[in-house]
Image (cartoon, rainbow, N blue to C red; front, top):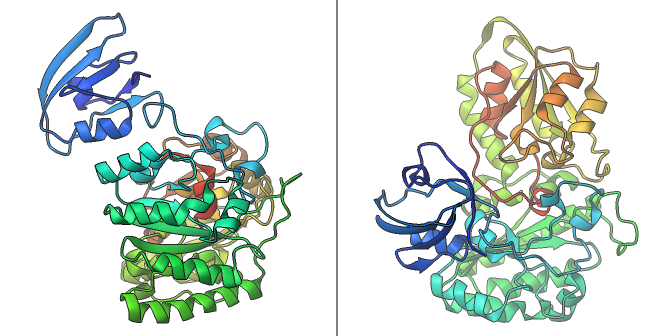
Amino acid sequence: MLPKIIAVYPGSLAEELELEPGDELLTINGQPIRDIVDLQFALAGEELEVVVKKANGEEWEIAVDKDYDELLGAEFEHPTIDRIHLCHNKCVFCFVDQIPKNMRKTLNMRDDDYRLSFLHGNFVTLTNLKPAELERIAALKMSPLNISVHTTNPELREKMLGNKRAGQILDQIRFLADNGIEMNTQIVLCPGWNDGVELDRTIEELAEFYPAVRTLSVVPVGLTEHREGLVDLRPCTGEEAATMTEQLLVWQDRLREKLGANFVHAADEFYVIGKRTVPPAKYYDEFAQIENGVGMIRTFLDEFSRLDSEIPDRLASLRKVAVVTGMSAKDVIMDRVERLKQVSGLEVDVYPIVNEFYGSQVTVTGLVCGRDIVKQLRHQIHAQELILPDVMLKEDSDVFLDDYTLERVQEEVGVPVRVVPTTAGGLIYGALGKTNRLPRRKRYESTLDKASSSLY
């Protein structure tokens, strides 16, 4: 499949090359462009000879000089240029199997593409990887990769992932490590499956690959109310979450002495479930897995403390705002909002949203849907603005997971909405009326990734 352009960004290199929607990119400096990886490596040069097949069938050869880090500035039919590699696993905990029908296509797609892991940080299982693709990762030094391991027990991994190739994971990791590929790994913890002694085994065996395996995160299984006909799973209890975080502390003490790093980390949600205080920043090994819900609370709290001096004593005129958040983050947000309430002339109310769309067991902010905000807040808000964290919205548009638009939510709730970064600064400056949404890192949309990211 030739890379067909569907959009050209204004002021971009693609616009300078006079590329247009419908054009097909053939080669750059003689290198055929098969996928996004070929394109990224081809664009590393500063002098390019680009061959393009125009929509009318003509072939153009164009020479151009560019800055070293300048991107093409064109959008293709698929995020990987060719088609995304799909997942053929049948994971017992698969979130895609648990979402309501008729969701938008990208949310129903089971992607397991190593290129999305390299470029956008998505987690992949490696079970759908061909030997030639593993060799390509090594040859091109596509590092770091984010890998969903879940367990290093071959038989258990085959059972959990529903794939007979899943038991090869340690051999695959060893190959990548031997070829200089850095990896971040994760475990989706399913009580009664890969916890307890199985968790001990996985930590021990992955730690042997440090520093090639840089980090290991443990995140809670995400379970919705749409599990008809699926394997019987349950969420962690508060006691189990507390026990697991203590289990990781024992491992961290051992590994810190051996490796000089804590290596394994619990997702924030475990501290919420287990009613435990999140650790200090030094616990998190430079927050390598913050986008996987590991360390978000700590960075939020520390950032809020740093910005405290910028909070004024009073406002010139009365300002009333309402803050929306998920259930997991409500205590953290409410606690910080108490500080904002000390500002004379500022009134702030917090509205935690129960996730009725996916089910009340789904508590993370990133999975809050527009219809639940509307249902629970319609005619309830007496404020000038509704403060909404941007993690609830699709990356490149104002659309919630359930396809409710921001405009619709604003209209039906009856209050203007201010979208802010999902940070302490976003909360503070949003409440004060000083910020709107900032650009976020581009990432291929995946419900699976949003399900494993936690909190506000």
